[in-house]
Amino acid sequence: MGICLDPYNDFTNGFFFGISPYGVQREGLISGGGKGDDGYNINWDNKWYSAVKRLEDRWIAEIAIPFKSVRYNQKELVWNVNFIRQDLKRNEVSS
Image (cartoon, rainbow, N blue to C red):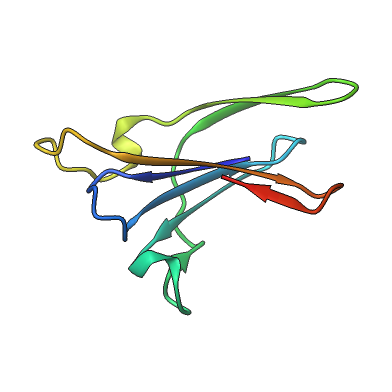
């Protein structure tokens, strides 16, 4: 499960936060639309919080991303958000 935030509303740059069913966190910077070798920087490391609850037939994730963890323009009132779900059992990715 993941979330992409585009606080500049430019459809090109942003931040990615993801979590696995076992609570493993990952995050990264997105630039240039995520294309090319420099489009996704996984070396970015920031503080955010998550919790996962695993059930018999599904799992539930809750995440909290502090505003201080991302750069944003206070004058920009519209952010782009994209949620990503990957189902490895069915080989499906949806967003």
